[in-house]
Length: 92
Image 1 (cartoon, helix red, strand yellow):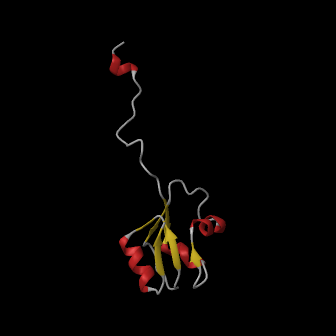
Image 2 (tube, rainbow, N blue to C red):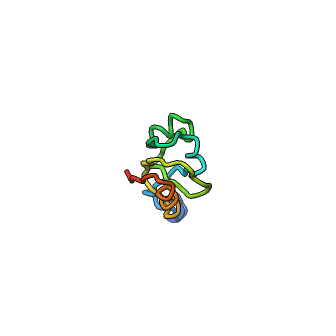
Image 3 (cartoon, rainbow, N blue to C red):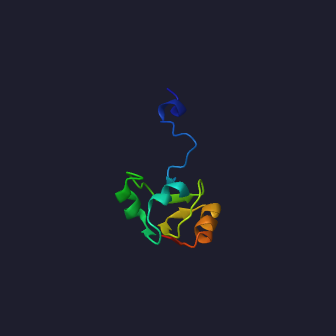
């Protein structure tokens, strides 16, 4: 049997790819105003069960409270919405 048929196929995805858990801004409305949101708080609330390689905050929804959000990545629009609501953003 030829060598290319004997070796396993791995596809075109990089093996060192990082998988982030996605959290939308609308899900952060459940927290109280002025609170600090970090990965431990997100897991304790039950928004995610496994953090994998990190948490990414996306801008789907509207944020009306000032929150301090600590996450691994933020989209540009999410960062702007959190700051516009009077909160702060910190990348871990």
